[in-house]
Length: 176
Image (cartoon, rainbow, N blue to C red; front, side, top):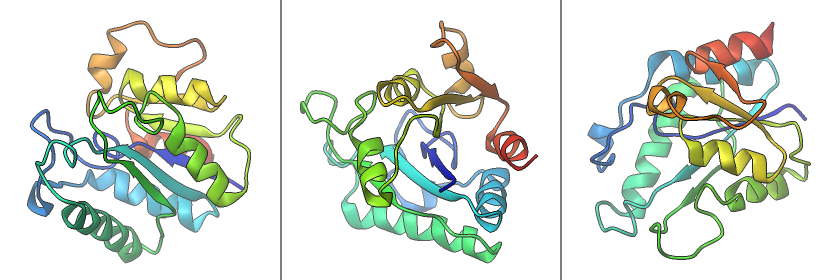
């Protein structure tokens, strides 16, 4: 199985330090939607693992989050692709869960869903937490410069981290 795991905010859609609280605030990165569709059409399974502490903070509810993910699926489908499993962590940073990145719980959930192993699987994110989660389960950490990626680049990266301008560049590499 060719599995690619993506963070959401900053990788697939515009990020906001004020949180993405409504469907109207969920602004897709056009080249990322096209990249997911291209990968899907080429036989890749594209899954998503996203921290969504805005739920725990009361900024939005699960129905709003699901509407954002339905919109993502719709946009990718319009280009002939599909999005695989989307998992989210609804917890706050102090809730002590095992799913909130940098912990690898969501990545393990995706692996269990697809009955596959994670070592070597690319996990694309824009924060240090994404990269740490990838390392915790032997995924290949991949940083994109979109979202918080430029800020993350200013700090030391885990050894072996691959860096790309955006998700379209990741897709170009995987499809070459």
